[in-house]
Image (tube, rainbow, N blue to C red; front, side, top):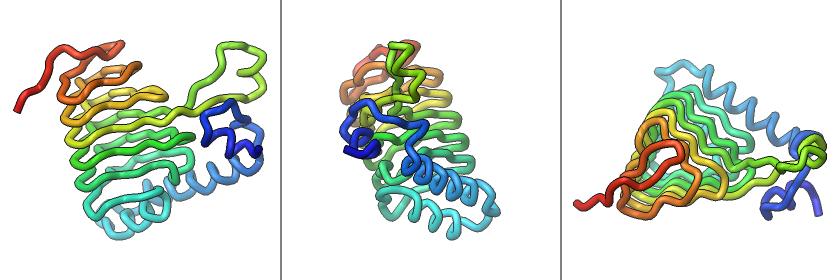
Length: 186
């Protein structure tokens, strides 16, 4: 089994020394660099770069520069997606965003985790668990979402939160660790 196959299955894999994964990350970083350095008024060019980079996008999406990701092909954007500046997605596993997702500045979605055992971690091993964000979700500024998390539909995640466990639909959740403080009713 290749390191990429291990990565996509959520198994421990060699992220730091596998030549194929390094090449894929370098390709992604080159596209991110190009996107981040495209003149702001050239929206069409920036959108085309993202279409080459990301796994799937719908018709209406915006990511404000700067944006960084590891691979790109594991990222899926729903319709009417918006991310403000400084979005980071470490996408060793699938990261999917539903429709009508709005992300404030300085947010991170990290599928990557590392073993607690020092001997494994020092070999460059890591794992990746998918992140799923539902429809109609608002993510406040400086939010971090950790590996394996699902945030349900119609949620608001308060600024500065660190999401370490799943958030059920129709919730207002805040804090570090992020916890549900209120159910949202229309």
